[in-house]
Image (cartoon, rainbow, N blue to C red; front, top):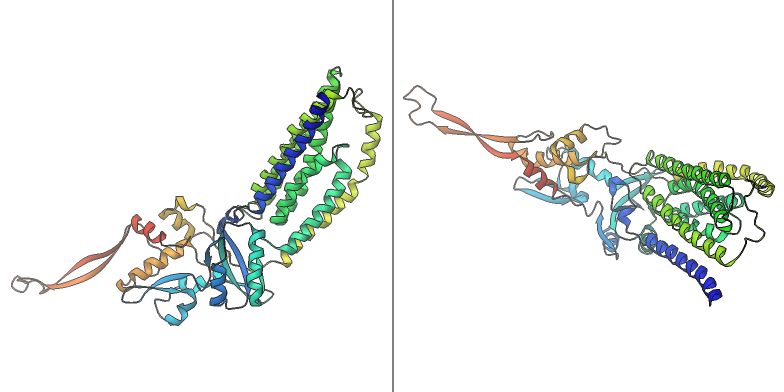
Length: 466
């Protein structure tokens, strides 16, 4: 009965580990798209469709896709302007038909807003669409391909590129092969390989930043794993080891752990610098957390093995610190360091080059230094004076446009409204007994017709499509 129990427990642990990795695979492949986006378009996928016009039929089919909750395009996005009989709603595609270019109501916000839906690559024009969906980029890309290619159009998705994913996975596999030849703990290759799955899924559903993160983090994680295997095996195999040897082994594990933490911090800093707000950091944390789950399984496996096997057969114990056998193995493995560094030096430029070759010149708005729940007059005014990377309007320009359209009949200029700003009209009237008293027969008074209060600010912003 004891023998059966000893054989069953490791198999049960392997089954649990496989189920955990499988659950992570399903979760990341069907992860809501809102978690993948950049801060500027959080919750939306950016889609490029070749051509200068999208077409009503294709727009309707895209909007009807399962899982797509909102579609923003030049044909579906609307704005308001003063029609002299009230505020009129019109789509961006029809603004030029409704207003003449020299019409004073055709303000700069209305002229520049269509730029959000225009992109260019190698002098080829593309329509830009923003889709809100809770599907993963892999699933959404498959559905889009069925619809768009049926209409004979080409498309690209900013958040997921299958061609780039193939390149990243190829570089990932080559790097992993040499890495395991260099660092994988002998006898625990399968357990080490299980840690690759989360990183592979991150790269498959992410971008070149995930590949760079893997290059920087996983080698140190594998080194820490190898040191930990040696420490646990030594402690479980023999309780009579020299205390100085145990302390040296523990210091080695602690040092490798500190190197892992430093590499993780460095990788995430390098990710934040080029792409602030990137979701790669969250994916790095998820992969590392899943890899850490391996360590309790490792301890239980080694513990059961030590319990039912008297000695670790043909495995040298660290009685004298590093044995000559281990030293020869280390020297042999060190010969792989040069090709490993060569792979890194070649693949990183390839990843950046692929990003450049497949990149679009797409709209990049001026980002706010606040989140939507912290909007105020002060933050919007600060946004207005923040240097912009392009002429595309932002939230402060929308506020200026709204105030201008509502006050154009009262002579208001196209400027950012200040808190509590009031608009007046002059009322003229005949004064009673004005001529008898030597005064003017016609009097004048000011009447307030509009005030831009805080309530107006949030009422205006609540009409935005988000």
